[in-house]
Amino acid sequence: MAFRRSIPQEELRARLTPQQRARHETTYQASRGGHFPTPPKPVPGTPKKPREN
Image (tube, rainbow, N blue to C red; front, top):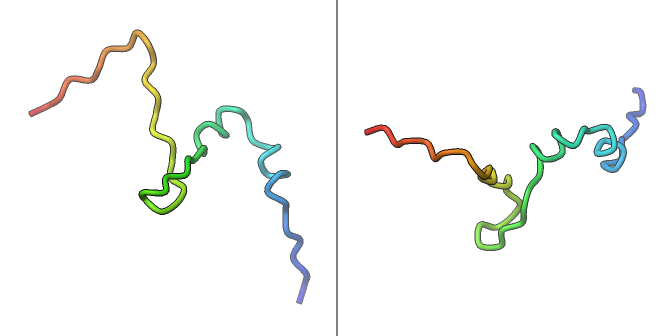
């Protein structure tokens, strides 16, 4: 049986690009009981999507 090398989280995080880091970012929400993905932020100047009925 071979030994498995564990990779530290800091090393994995260092390999990510800033875009990948932003995509996988989470925030802690106590009311929901843990870490959840950050909702996308609105970009200034873009119109809201029309709702389809």
